Image (cartoon, rainbow, N blue to C red):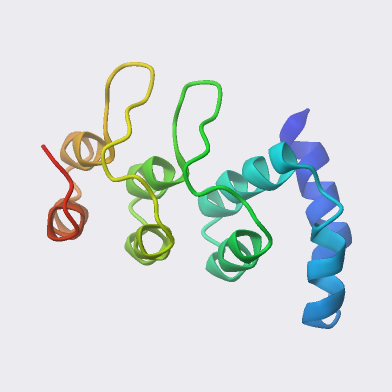
Length: 126
């Protein structure tokens, strides 16, 4: 239900309009809706919306019900560009999900060697 609600909300605010109109529309979303939308847009691999949501206040260190962060979602799906956007915007490289997995442990588990190197180069601990 949450995803459907968020997508309807985003569709309302992200239809072709001026950037100012989009930002004004997104400012009406709650923090929880912005944070959920950020994870949803990462999973959809939509970096334009990821950047816009961050600009509008989405928390790059938010956690879902399994404590998975936006950076972990980017790593799980193998989205290097998205991971870099999140890192550049202050994503915690060493945060843990409810099982103790960090972004680099997810990268190792998924055999995403390019992301292991990216995370290490930005200071992630193994």
